[in-house]
Picture 1 (cartoon, rainbow, N blue to C red):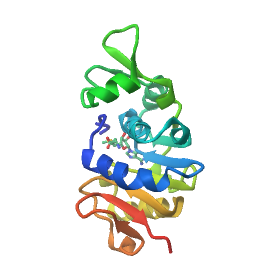
Picture 2 (tube, rainbow, N blue to C red):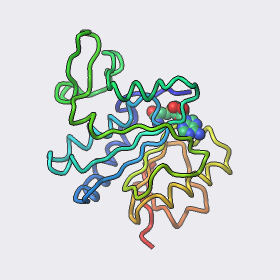
Picture 3 (tube, helix red, strand yellow):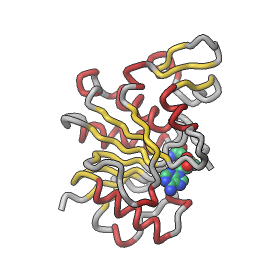
Picture 4 (cartoon, helix red, strand yellow):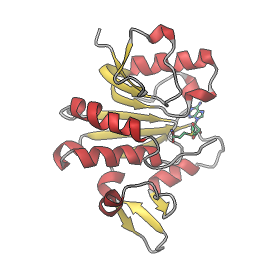
Length: 204
Ligand SMILES: C[S@@+](CC[C@H](N)C(=O)[O-])C[C@H]1O[C@@H](n2cnc3c(N)ncnc32)[C@H](O)[C@@H]1O
């Protein structure tokens, strides 16, 4: 099931804005992996969040890799994310000020396109998490929401192990609200705020 939307989880986004962006914004490159991104609303929400918190100088160091395994052979997510076009209904949850700043009109008055600075920060590739081979390494932030719940407990542990290895020391992991981090990770991921599914990889 590939349901998604812009600004879906405001608690997590607030926590990312408060804790993650200030911690990583001075990196030469801020590498973010959105794993299980569906049709792109989530990675573009992250790009908008970073843009709204950072000046243009630091924002251009953001590199979001959005991945999904695409159940069909038809590359629907790839095409959607490359076009970066969404209907009026799709962008309903985007705050008005962000709609005005980060979307532009198209020939169709019901369709809006992310502006070029936002589009340029998001890359998409097809990737199956259960291969357990990360597409790249050295992430400051991994976002994997509403995906792990579809995996068996054993596979969840394997995928979290891959995320842990792929994150930089001190890097962050955002999962969904119902996702408990299993006991093997208790000392390796520290929860940032009670009740918020945002974790930080221990430095050691
Ligand atoms: C409910 S959507 C979540 C989309 C977005 N992360 C969100 O929270 O709004 C779940 C997504 O996980 C993807 N998915 C499921 N199994 C996967 C796998 N093994 N590897 C990569 N993506 C997978 C599905 O294709 C789907 O797009």
